[in-house]
Every structure is written in C-alpha cells, then in structure tokens.
Image (cartoon, rainbow, N blue to C red; front, side, top):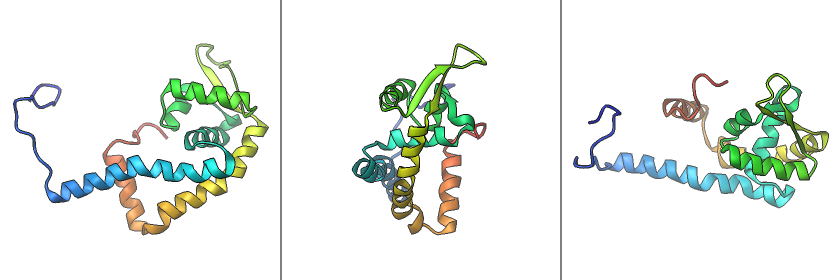
Length: 162
C-alpha cells in the first residue's frame, strides 16, 4: 500500500460479499434514484428543480437571507459553477440578487428576494410531502438515527460545518 492509503493495481481486488453487495446496491439506488423522485413534484407543481429549491431554501434560512456563494454551493451540494448558473436563472426570475460581500469584496453574496422567498414558501410543503413520503415516514426513529450516523461515519457531512 502506498503512503496515501491507495492499493497498487497489482493487488487482487477485495470482491464484495453478499451483505456488502446489498449495502452497496441500496446506497447507489438512493444516490442515483432518490434525487429524481424528490425533484419530480417540484418540477410539476412549481417549475423548479431540486437543486434550485435547495439553493432557495438555504438562502431562506440564512441570516438576512444571504450567503456567500461558496458556502451556498457547499450547503446545496453543488459546484460553484453549477450554482452560478442556477443563481443567474434565479436572478432573471427576480428571486435572487448578487452583490459583493461588504466584509470582504473578494466574495460574492447571494440574497433571496421577497419573490424568491414566496417561491420557497409555496414549494416547501411539496418538498416536505416528498421527503416524508419517500424517506422519513418509512423509517423508524432508530432507522433515522442510523442514517444520520452512517452519513457522519462516511464524512458526508463534515464535522466542522454546522
């Protein structure tokens, strides 16, 4: 094994046993299929994507409804370039405005407008119904805690980011 912890290509792969294969298939199904199922009602009822909803929702919960673009990209689990494209579309719709961060002009702030907040308020019940129906309602409290614990173990949510 190299210093970086990677296995050399000449080593035999550790094939998945049946339990590992079942766990992997479950995870990959969640990762690949769940976002589309969560997005479908948002598109149908409000004409927005899941990513747009997450961006607008994070802004709605932020102090003064504004965040630095880099922080917003992290919160919405997207790249800065993807976020920039979405913010541009949201600006065109009058939902978001961008401005230099007065604390440090090297950063750009995205701020949710009243019209953008109205979209979040309208779409939130739709998103909540999908989250409950597709995920939470079928899980026990113990399952929900296990899911949180698994995400933490996999470092999906960094410890130092609240």
